[in-house]
Amino acid sequence: MKEIRALTSLRGVAAIWVFLFHLDSERPLFPHQLRDWLPVGRGYIAVDLFFVLSGFVLALTYRESFLARPPAIAYPDFLLRRAARVMPLNAAIVAVLSAAIWLAPGRAGDNFAAARDPGAVIANLLLIQDWGFAPSIDKPSWSVSIEMAVYLAFPALLALAWSRRFWMLAVLAGAASLWWLNRAGQGSVSQASVTGDFIRGFAGFTFGLLCFRVLASGSLPKAIGRLDFAVLAIFWAALLLSPGDLPPILVCPAVVLTLATERGPLARLLRLRFLHYLGQISYSVYLVHYCVLGGLNLLSIGSPVLYATAALGLTLAISAATYRWVERPARRWMTSTRLSAA
Image (cartoon, rainbow, N blue to C red; front, top):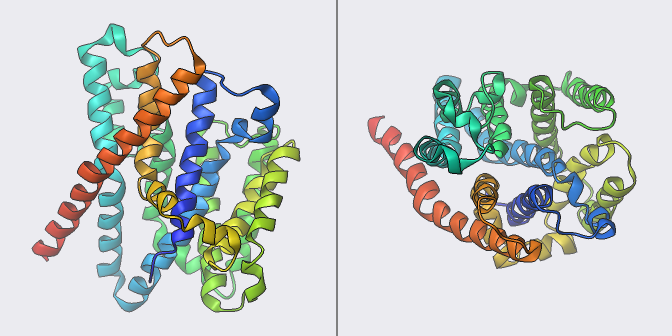
């Protein structure tokens, strides 16, 4: 099925939101009132939006393949393509950070200290570190590690989401798990715990699958798609006004679903070329930006504005380069090698 450009662009916007969250954590840039209105301090919820987006897009991309081919063929092909999508860039970043830690331990700082442990390096290369094996060397990669676990369960989650009897159970289980996590964290789902990370990943991904089921069924009223700005306003209000993380997270599926119809003014805005390109390089932005911030922290940059400008410029430039010379060639090579062998 065709790409939904608005959702690709949304990934880019979400990646910049995560960037701003970490930027403000490293070097406060925004006045307190502006920081609350943006809201930068809740940038970690962009990861929950990523999980919903991932579930939707993977259902869009692979459901027909699973229906048309035997599981013994469709499932390994799916895993290979997902590994080709997420592992090469992560491996390159882990290798560079590990080399920096070992070659210049006094200069590398503590941001990437996990790279001193060979076991942690192996776990990070395999993207299984957040399964309870090791800390993430590149901090944002924890969510990619959770996605790897979700990929393994993809056929079961897909079947659950399309089940006539149990799809509502999936909704209730996801919402109840997030409610428990939000309550246990006293309003915060970002607890850096293995259990919490798995709940966020599996719940968000399942919500994304269910969103695609609704869209594919054709039962969604056309007028809903024109309300994308209204849904965004509700999401924004939940971020600003809710003392806990649960309300904005539960609005994420509505944001994805309304934009996926591509009928509203916000969807048309997100189809702009530069936003679409930002979405294409969003995975690089997501993994590269924390490395850039860690590198800039080694320099004596007094001005927060100069620091932020350098961080954004370097992140975008390096991300464009890694997308072109790491992500795309490695994905082509890994998938073409499999096809040639077959």
